[in-house]
Amino acid sequence: MDIKQAIAAERTALADLLDGLADADWEAPSLCAGWRVREVAAHMSFGFRSSRSQTLRELLRARGSLHRMTDHCARRDAAAMSTAAIAAALRDNAHHPWKPPVGGLPAALGHDVVHGLDITVALGHGRRVPQERIRVLLDTITPRSLKFFGADLDGIALRADDLDWSYGTGTPVSGAAQDLLLVAFGRRLPAGRLHGEAAHRFTAGPASPAPQEGGDGAVRR
Image (cartoon, rainbow, N blue to C red; front, side, top):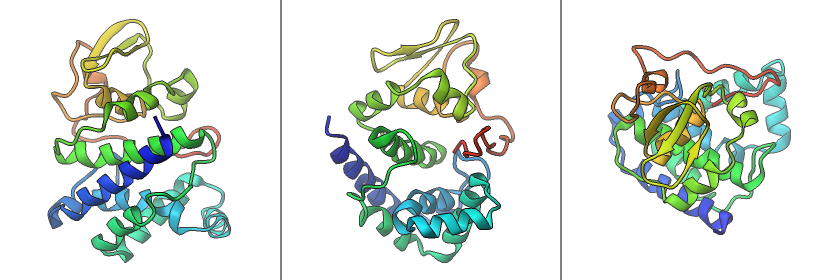
């Protein structure tokens, strides 16, 4: 798979989806604790809209905390930008070469796919990410990535229902591959999407904890 083309296609599809959201959807909570759909969508294009020097200045204002910087900028931009502008920022930058500090192109694809699912799954939208994109991301899961995103899979075996993929050993938790990807990225899902006696460990309760910083100061969003 051409990952650059997959990234561009994912951003374009998500921009189209955002353009079709009702006003109430933009104000709905996402799977990112503490962020509405509006904040997630605004955050997705922050790297395209900000130079390295601007990002460093924001990080200094946040006293070196990437978590505080990310949260502040997402809330600021979500308040300042119209919904049309937020969607356009994603579409107009479909081929932008931005990548996270680590992980290369697969991490850039993961950023778009996971945040897109943060929106669509929370809204109960039926979008299915093409399986070849999900497969690339599932293959990047390691003990180190699980720790970074705060995903505790101790004693759990993830088993995809729609792909020949599994990870870990222990009590089986099954579901669609894209839902298991969210689990590996530290998300808690709405009830009914996962199956198995340990599914409750990864299912959202009345309230979800706020996102935490990793030991290296990186936000686990």
